[in-house]
Image (cartoon, rainbow, N blue to C red; front, side, top):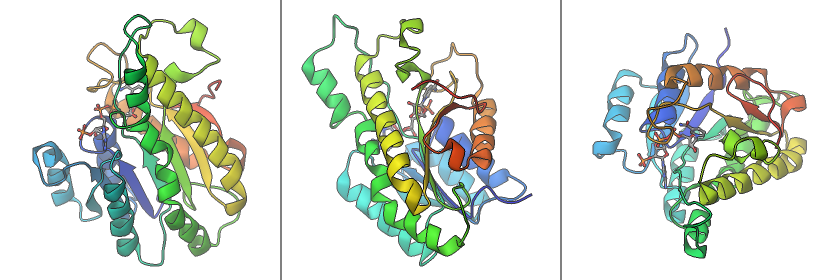
Length: 257
Ligand SMILES: NC(=O)c1ccc[n+]([C@@H]2O[C@H](COP(=O)([O-])OP(=O)(O)OC[C@H]3O[C@@H](n4cnc5c(N)ncnc54)[C@H](OP(=O)(O)O)[C@@H]3O)[C@@H](O)[C@H]2O)c1
């Protein structure tokens, strides 16, 4: 069984889906050689579970990254780049997110703007694959493989079905205007990047992880994090030229944008 990718970067990995992604990647029968696990405070209390995991698996490297802080993003790009040297990064999983609630009644411009500026990481995440682009391009040159694949070079944005405009009329219950608007913008960026980067050999896609039991997903949801992540990690192996720019769920089903 081949590794999903030689190097994988998981952004926002100190808890929830991100932590489980790192755990399952490291424990897989054929793990990636390099697993870069980012969090805002890798040495602090919030990074404790990640520190324990990294102590068991030398393939895991902890990287400081606050997605709303540009110097921090640049520092993370430098840290990952200098570790990989001339090999480049194969797979970036853009997972960090914060759910910002506001109903139509409580919504104001400040809440909406903050979803696109300083509180919610999605908007900065919009440009995160762009910041890591040089490393992805380096991976394309390094692998010499044809076509598009996650083992070559790919950016996966963790999205949510809640932002599917096609399904919106059927999912009216979530009063999360700022979250849904900024994640929808992230979806558009995924789609644009997929179109722009396919000629450079880089695959981009958006994945909905299911309604998962985490801080974001709350306790009252149907999917356990282990199950969701097993799916999220199965989907990338099947991605190719045909599925670049797709919006998929954790079971590989296509979702309307
Ligand atoms: N759970 C669900 O049902 C569900 C459904 C659809 C989509 N999603 C998406 O799945 C992704 C993971 O969510 P989750 O359920 O695992 O939620 P979670 O347990 O709340 O984890 C969110 C992660 O994002 C990180 N993060 C937040 N702001 C950050 C920032 N500025 N810089 C760096 N990292 C930051 C958090 O780090 P800190 O601990 O430092 O805050 C944490 O590691 C999110 O993008 C979410 O929107 C989740």
